[in-house]
Length: 95
Image (cartoon, rainbow, N blue to C red; front, side, top):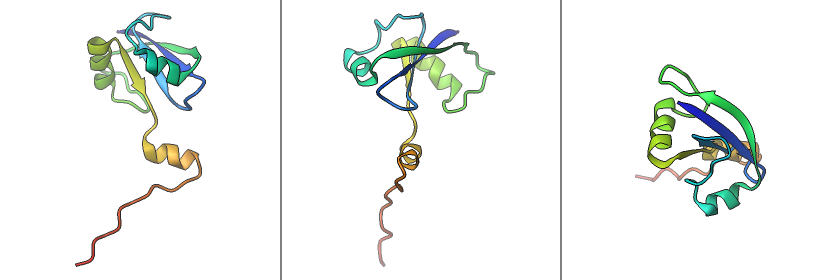
């Protein structure tokens, strides 16, 4: 499955995968505004044997087929670490 991966200038480490180059017709307008100006980061041929660094390949392919796009965002703890903050954890209840 051929995909085109874009990086927005408003959201660090967020990537938008689409099936056709420069075709954002399946992407909600609000998401496009949130990401900002999109720049093609890479073109990639996805298949079930391929390994992605920060996403499950099968989930990416399934979401692309169902929605026409996939949004990859850093997890919360990674985002907090990059911002120099520690994740907030719930206190352990006392017995």
